[in-house]
Length: 245
Image (cartoon, rainbow, N blue to C red; front, side, top):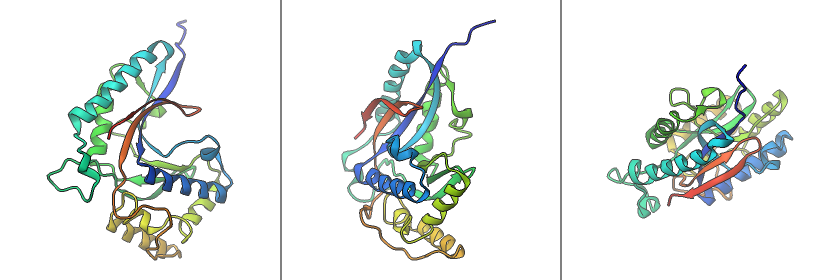
């Protein structure tokens, strides 16, 4: 019987500018207090968006790191130019952009609560490029959920939730003290139509439909991706971070 080679799971993730990350950390901490589930805060999981997960043997970690560097270089120099003035004001149609729009809050199987970004555009291209480069060498992890045809991008706010914790968390996010419409509108990475949809959903659910601002949330621009990271999972341990701005 052939002995299986032990492996670890690694994730390739996108990290946000500090204003955006701070706003998400604050919301994650609030949700942890409301649900009494502190997994995200105790484990210091940074606000991030995972674009791929792979199984990697100890012997192949060096190959993984080199391929990761090649991937980052391809994003910066091949797939996307990142002009310095991209984030100063609204990008023009002529300017290649990596705008990240948040469109709502959703869940996986009543166990994970997350912020949902728009899937298409550059975000989808990054996911496709990553798998084109990595799949010839590494097996996909997490039940293949990050493959381009299966991927559902998300920024986790709460994970490993019980049914009661999930219910408390979702109810909290419908209140004025929870996720404000400005988080999805003029706030980090939002679009006005997304805020309208959230307001309508809140009103239908008996919540507050007002577009109220929340202290600490940056206004009037999209979220900015500043870093691409490689991390080992369980527990979440950063391996390499490369700034892209």
